[in-house]
Length: 363
Ligand SMILES: Cc1cc2nc3c(=O)[nH]c(=O)nc-3n(C[C@H](O)[C@H](O)[C@H](O)COP(=O)(O)O)c2cc1C
Image (cartoon, rainbow, N blue to C red; front, side, top):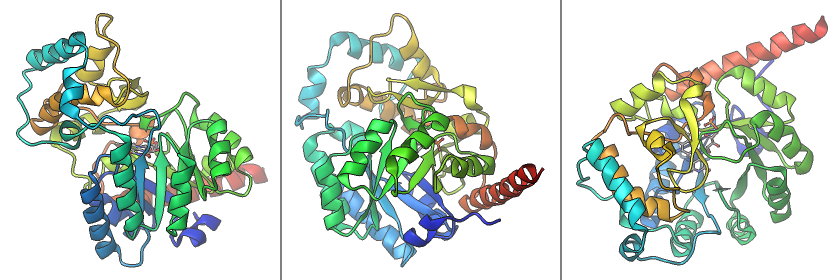
């Protein structure tokens, strides 16, 4: 029994395995391994998106790829990061300075996406324009799905995905005319709602009707893929898996932390962006969990507050503090592999799981 479903023909791929990463090398390897890559461009400036899409098109030729953006409607119109930083509560700024002192975090020497601007509706509009003008085959929206953005993407000939964390979000996606719904459960790395993948996927499938659904959150083994089919999904969408790939080339301190982690080593925290986000546990998440810590600020202010220290932590690889969005599926990624090896493992395991299920059912 082969790992395939109708979405493979619809999207022009060999396996119904979709992957999100912020790395072009992972995207290229994933497409070549038979999956469908969706580039996370939420941390890219508009001109970077144009260039990243150009490179992917050049590398991939006719193989399809998508671009994913975060478009939270709760974020406002403020565009002056310095003014915004100056206006943040003193208690929060002092708390961040204390962390920097305690762990001896040097200043970053290079600006980053978060240290050079504040997320605003203007930025989202410019990111969207760059995405629509690109040769990406599809557009995915996460953390917010303004229906007019879905319409614009469809008018530009893009296939549209929407990541949802609750059945009511699936209703909205359906009403907006989304082509593929990604049901992303609580187990997932990154921003996530409170419903576990096992409970979420069949509820979203029931709402979706004829719209294909992908299962996301906690998929680390072929048995999860087989289970996703049983829940009514036509495929899976993975994020954590690719962090442990050679192509992602994470820095040593972070990679070592991830390779030895299991599902208990992730935590839900507001400390990254102000929205509920599953991260690998670190001294960063621990500090913000302390009873005397201030409550993280709302998006986008938490990242205005923390951008400079995070830039220093990442640039200088401050081991105790360094972190990344990571799902409970990390338990299945404890060795550094190529994207192709990860894909081959998932394919073999899922095909074995299908035949085991068949034998069980046959008695
Ligand atoms: C490092 C990392 C970054 C992520 N960034 C985004 C993002 O920018 N946009 C998005 O839609 N999802 C993002 N996600 C969530 C993934 O799209 C996906 O739904 C999730 O990783 C699935 O669960 P898993 O982590 O167990 O594979 C991210 C996940 C990880 C692990």
